[in-house]
Image (cartoon, rainbow, N blue to C red):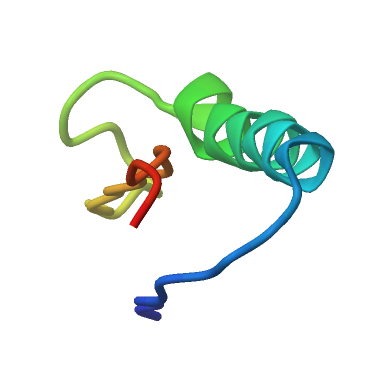
Amino acid sequence: MTVGAELWIEPEAAERACRQLADIAAEPHDAARPLRSPGTMPMGVTLMAFPMGEG
């Protein structure tokens, strides 16, 4: 899955989205097991959300 967007949103919505994205990112991080553990598969995760300035 991939998502790319430049969005113009209110600061409160941006802060809320960043908190939600941090929660989402924590799930696979917390589920991580040692390298090549039986029953596991590799998964790449990249997540970025940041203010882009005034435009």
